[in-house]
Amino acid sequence: MASPRIAAENVIREFLGRIKKDPASPLDAPLYADGVGLDSLETAELSALLEDEFGSDPFSSADELPQTLAEVLDHYGAAVEAEAV
Amino acid sequence: MADYDPAAHYDRVTRAWALLMGDDLHYGYFEDPAEPVATASDRLTSLMIEHADLAPGLRVLDVGCGSGGPASRLVAEHDVDLLGITTSAVGVDTARGRFAALDLSGRFEQRDGTDTGLPDASFDRVWVLEASHLMPDREALIREAARVLAPGGRLVLCDIIRRREIGFLELRERREEFAVLRAAFGAARMDPLSAYAEHAARHGLTVDVETDISAETRPTFAAWRANAERHHDAVVDLIGADELDVFVRSLAILEGLWDDKTLGYGIFSARRAG
Image (cartoon, rainbow over all chains, first blue to last red; front, side, top):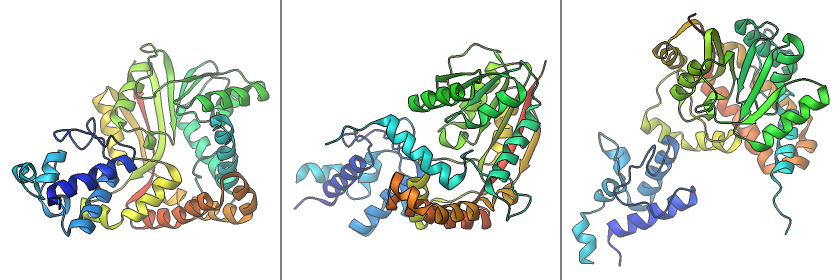
């Protein structure tokens, strides 16, 4: 069974493909502007999708919005857990 | 399977939108909420013309010229030397065809309003009618307008504006409403009217008009709704029932956003010294 981090990554990448952003974006890519290119509405949609899937999301629960894919995934578990699976 | 024809698609969409929004394809400035949208949208163009202070021979850059509707009025009524630019190749062709049919003189080119490639100080007027909300970087648009304006030249702009901050949690809660707007009108980003004025001042322009006309444009949505009812079958034939439904749903959403002062409409002009 995939870790929450891997499951979240799969959900995010599928979402990126659906909204015509690069689903293979590197983990350290900035989420907004010149990186992945999420606008505010797409970010809100991703936030809601992640909360629906996993019960929580890093966008609505943090004081500051995550800036990279890696920071989003950190909400669902540390990277070392994914490597151990 | 039929090949996708961008020109034919653009033509169908443009004809549908003309039935829904009126031939000018933009908001109206209503003095009477019951007046025809054609009268009101013509008045908005007239308001822009008034602020542009046009004269024969002036070099006018129409940024986001669409299919050349307002541009045709600038040339026909004021005999300006016009270049219309849009990122749409089909829009360029359509505008050229419109001008040819009207026997008007004007040029249309496919260029990006935020990075035109045009020479410095090569225009007397920059005209941006309801196009800036479709550009991701408003400051780049203003900076570019200031660059291509000759000394003494004027920038005139009208567009949908944001009248208050929308926090992330509110945006998330209302995401379905904004998704309907995106489906109807495309990805858009609205800034406060003050932001346009700040960008202009930062890039050497002196602002002389900065007016919120949200109240005067609000009746536009009822007018468009009436058109949707009046032209229902024709619009469905052109773009389908789902597209028409999205458009109609967007109107109530926009009325709500006008009424809670989230969005509105503004007009702005600024002059380059010289």
